[in-house]
Image 1 (cartoon, helix red, strand yellow):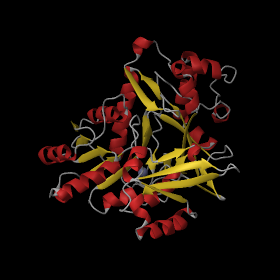
Image 2 (cartoon, protein in one colour; image 1 turned 90 degrees about the vertical axis):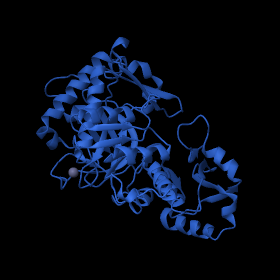
Image 3 (cartoon, protein in one colour; image 1 turned 120 degrees about the vertical axis):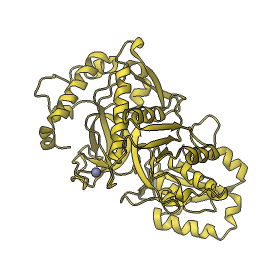
Image 4 (cartoon, helix red, strand yellow; image 1 turned 135 degrees about the horizontal axis):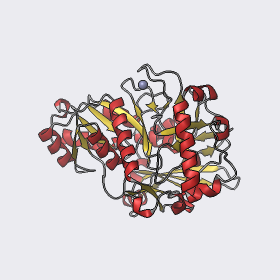
Amino acid sequence: MNKSTMVENSEQMIALRKLIRYASEHSPYYRETLKGHIELTNDFGIDDYKKLPFTSKEDLAANNESFLAVPKNKIAEYVTTSGTTGDPISLYLTKNDLVRLAKNERDSLALMGSTSEDLFQLLTTIDKQFMAGLAYFLGVQELDAGMIRIGPGVPQLQWASILKYKPTKLIAVPSFIVTLIAYAKENNIDFQNSSVEAIVCIGEPIRNDDLSYNTLGKRIADNWDVKLFSTYASTEMGAAFSECEVQQGCHLNEDLLFLEVLKEDGNEALDGESGEIVVSTLDVEGTPLVRYRTGDIAKVYRQKCSCGRDTPRLGPIIGRKKQMIKYRGTTLYPKAIFEVMESFSEISCYKVLINKDELNNDEITILLEEKIESLEVFGKIKELCQARLRVIPKFQFIEANVLRSKVYVKHLRKPEKIKFS
Ligand SMILES: [Zn+2]
């Protein structure tokens, strides 16, 4: 966002000043780090803001409790998110933060055209200190709509509920929808004529950079005539960017976040350019964050959306800054490799290993099941790597069971599809 939009948008500037004042007074971490950096007058503007230090995920992990800005008895919810070292990071929410969370998801769902007439089925975890399931539950209540909480997995239960209660919308991780479709086909469930009209997709991107469907999005859309909505959110932000009905990127909710999209050189990305998403969390009491570097890279769209709203929109996450791979003169993100692997139905499991060679360049090795080596498809995999990634990585073939145990590591919440060493 540039200065001219800030001036027009003074409400956001007021909220931003309020956040910075609040954080520097109440959060021990910011009391230290913002000391000497701010003189909060009414003239405090975007140029002053841009001089404030960033907060990284590492800062949040290393000083977790010092971010808490309220006495412990004001914490209504303890949620966690995975840290960079694998230790979970805690985020503390007050009662008002829960109200903010509800408002966020209500606005998100409304942006997608949802109303109080809708009935939602929740296919994600609501307990285990996860934020997303809880946030959607609260948002649906705030929208005055209905909710069926099935939770993750168990396709037969999901379908039984869909057929019985007739929800209009699902809230789900999109890769699980692929499983749901496969189950319906195997069990002759007439899913094409079900009550489901749309799916709110969380946690994984369903679009490419140019906003067309990626492999995952296509696998769903080609099989099931439902509308798919993208979202981008994180526990730290306590807010989501969501697609509107014209689906030209995910809109910022300006009441809840102040957004910067920063290029490598530190300058703000212009319309259609990509950069790192940096946010300040407006109106947060428990764990306020100032200039939080998410590490996520996306394109930003600043032209007015054809839905009529003029808030900036984000494209799908291209990758994480830390996961940028430099390989033989090209740079790429893990997602590009995943896309190639997931487009082959013969590949049911794989793992990408990134190692440094003696010249400190990244080396990519892909572990595949041993049967793939002798199949014709192996040639096609190499061809597609060349075409899409512009490089052919090394391949290593191992026994299927061994491979699966390397991907589905017991103590991890998600399959480990890539490992940096
Ligand atoms: Zn729009």
